[in-house]
Image (cartoon, rainbow, N blue to C red; front, side):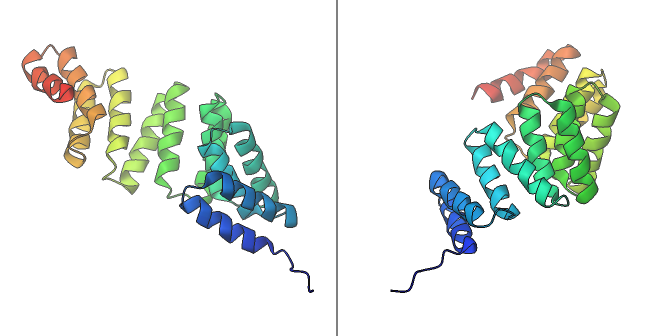
Length: 206
């Protein structure tokens, strides 16, 4: 009987199907099989890294994205995803460096600007954060979350009118966006306009 040859791409493709059908454990096994057969299979490392990230296996995800970058240093999404892992595990400077590289490779990626803005906010680089949020809004003006992020930063910096405009714009785009209403409610509280704040409180309590 002829021995069936194991082909890496077959495991990779089956892993993608399992991933799409939420069989994360099965998908991870298939991507690992593909890597076992082809040690430089960076797409398989990337897919397995995404699954490890979703499963909360941050160290394993970091290792997978490191492998992707070692094999293919021009893989922009790997830098972005590694940045996400570093950000949630507290390595904010490392995350910022990865986002910098991701933007260098993919200069029009909205999410990278937003997340780099968030990291800069956390690192107290407020001017840099505003610049990143502004760029993200230029690229995708209908993303409500970016306006809320910028509004929160403007509020913290005392730019109350700009914060109010950001929260209102977010609500225009996404009328049921609770975080935008919370920010707007805080704005009215800060200027002691309790009459306008009251309907916001009622909306949030519904």
